[in-house]
Length: 57
Image 1 (cartoon, helix red, strand yellow):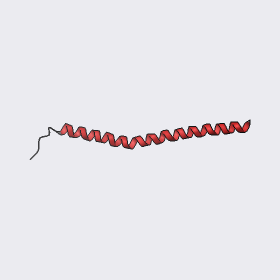
Image 2 (cartoon, rainbow, N blue to C red; image 1 turned 45 degrees about the vertical axis):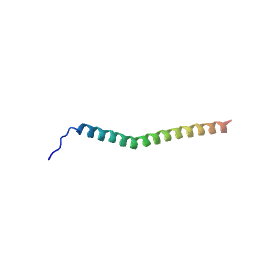
Image 3 (cartoon, one colour; image 1 turned 90 degrees about the vertical axis):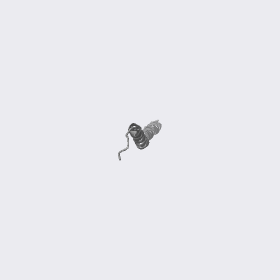
Image 4 (spheres, helix red, strand yellow; image 1 turned 135 degrees about the vertical axis):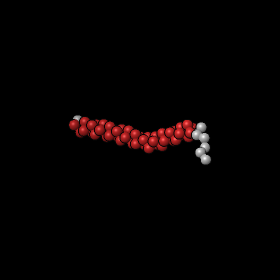
């Protein structure tokens, strides 16, 4: 016996929301890691620039 599929839009919407949340849980740490690495590189470049400037004077 095949049940009525009146509830299908709700089920597929739930699956879609779940997929978006899972994808965000994977992507967000990657983006955060990339941002943190860029900040650390920038900070290191500034420190190296300061140290080389101090050594010249």
